Image (cartoon, rainbow, N blue to C red; front, side):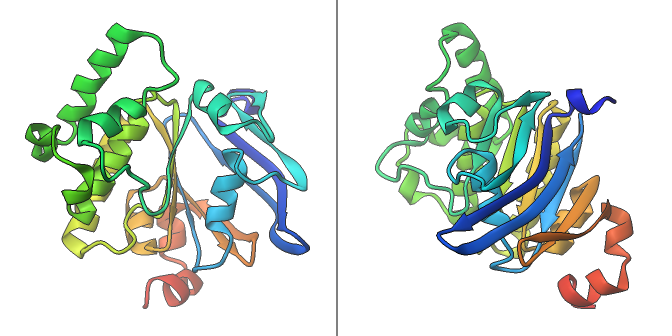
Length: 240
């Protein structure tokens, strides 16, 4: 595949908070049909990278390309229209609104009413345990269910690439497994995925390729299966 066709290509991306460096020349790619994971400890710069890709933090150097187009520094609403959607850390649902209202907000940038209705039916089918609770206030759902709603809301924008920022944080192990299966199911629908996670075991189990971010810089990259067998990764991230 030519690099021009890559769903996501981040090249030499650097960012600062004031005078404090947060990212240092980060380069990653997400290929067509891939789940790519970025793992690292708390404070490594993972969420900053997500925010910089999606236009919430302006980079001090480097570039972001979506499907061959330079979108560096583009506003989040324009990026949504380019096919990028984000599930933010902490889910950020509108708690006083119903599940259905949250999902409808995910399609704010779309005018194709009939297609939105079809996508709503399709997205709901991915989460059968929530199907009968569309009129339920979002704040009353469990943490795992809220994460499912957050993913469903992101899918309502009809993304071509989905960024997930710490989707399993704070969840019970059984729910973590459910979220992992959900991510794989979403990928099977043709959505390319960048998964940012502290839970390295889960992330490496479902990803095709992986990067390790430490101190704002990429320190390793390989297939997920190879990195999972690395003694350094096992000691630092897998507790082995």
